[in-house]
Image (tube, rainbow over all chains, first blue to last red; front, side, top):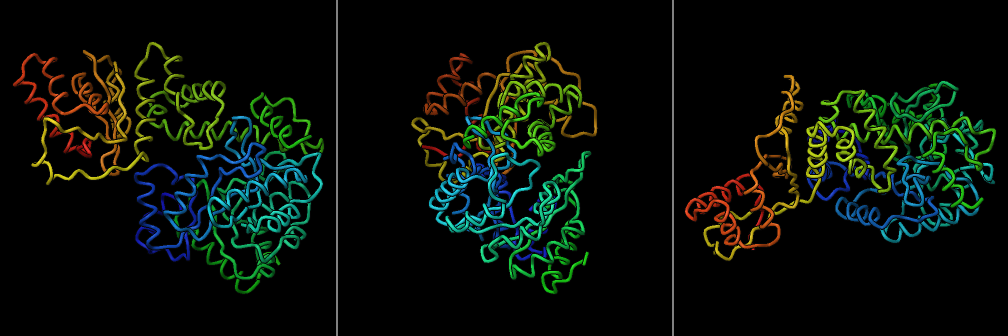
Length: 266
Length: 250
């Protein structure tokens, strides 16, 4: 839910099944953001998507963040609450970026512990989103999809599968995106993100969310939907926000591909 | 390496000039490090531009970005929320522009308006109950979003002109006497107003829980005339009610 589109959501005229918010944008004490959200909530179910939980931090979770997140969830009664497989900082420093984790047994233990704590406090399962990444760690001992599979098995959490992030990371790290999708426990995926990206000077793909969904991501999405079945899909745009109609055109294509399994790039 | 060591090492890299890659990153996978090094600073810079929009308009791109870089270099973010980044930017600007107090005052105004925008809600004052109030004993409940700061310049005029955008802002100038800038949110709309020291003192007394009678007594000391003080206090109270500064009575 982006500011230029608020009027359509407030009027209830946008033909969407739900809206997704960035949770942190509504975690203040009061004022217009919460007032707007409560009005929109009367028209649409709301999914809460966060960027600050830092489930992979060796420092553990932040009590103020969790308390405010719970207060918002109790107030909005969302479809679900999601955040990212990442960490944002340590030792009192916060990068405010979604930093990648080393895929090690220790990191898995810590992420599982943090997810379990958050789920207990929020009294609901979390959805964890796969990140896009530009580096990997020398200590990695398992692929990302195996790490995610273990997270769901050990904590009962669900997944928010970002198809663009799989494409970006697969391109940057040279793995097979279909192997990733086949390695994900399909029955744990509740939501999909579709977005665009940019290409850096050195050939790296950057998860900028400022472009339309490109053909390779549509093709991967179509193949994923053959495996995943009926899950919620959202078009994600964080910058260069286009008119709502443009995003609705992309949503219509997502619905068509989900229904037919047809791939643009096939 | 332990996860803590990897993460601590990576954060040190983010805060450095980026020339020494973290040891935990596979040598074959280091080309992406620059993405994170750049994104960290870019995110903080964008956060400052977002909150300090009028300050940015006043300084222009080059001076604002230079000040933002100085702030980022000396203020590593610690809060879980990016919304907190920018606290103290007015002090950074005050040090950078000691002869231009309007710059720091503009920054404080930008910051405080954002704080008021999503600050705590307050109940509506029950106007019908005002007739029954024992004003000698009454204690005033002030809007919880209120923020105050002594000012030396025409910052309120500058901010408004920068916000209007259809005319060039006037030159910065010193106010003829002491004044205080007040910011609060009426309903859903942040507001600001320059008030004289007497009204500021009255607000501070109300915030401390002093009675309305005590506020009137303080005004009388300033004005040296009880009748004038009563008239001023009445007018002030009426304005506070109309503008949403007074949100309750105890």
